[in-house]
Length: 106
Image (tube, rainbow, N blue to C red; front, side):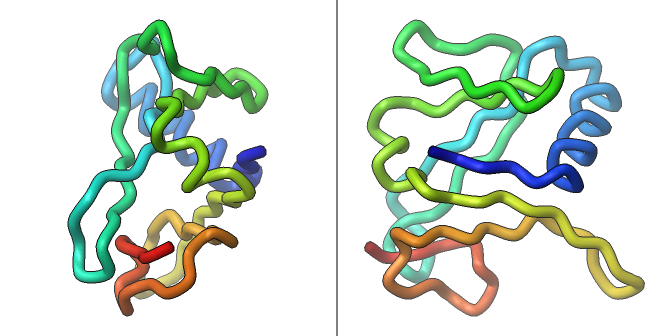
């Protein structure tokens, strides 16, 4: 199960509106990054036929079947401060991650 906090849902909603995207957010993983795997995060106009479609209020999130096992249990949050605004990944499957938090190893 993937969880997305209210702050993250609101920020995703803003991004979808800003980019006039009627679809949803694609979450996934791909090989690469300094720890071995990196997170995929992009707006997508529509899901693929094999995607899991998760709904959080009016926000849809698409996850492909190969990425889902690596993201199962994930909580996606959003933080904003004077210094930085960013999404924060809390992934219990990650055994280690890089200092920037954008890549991980299982």
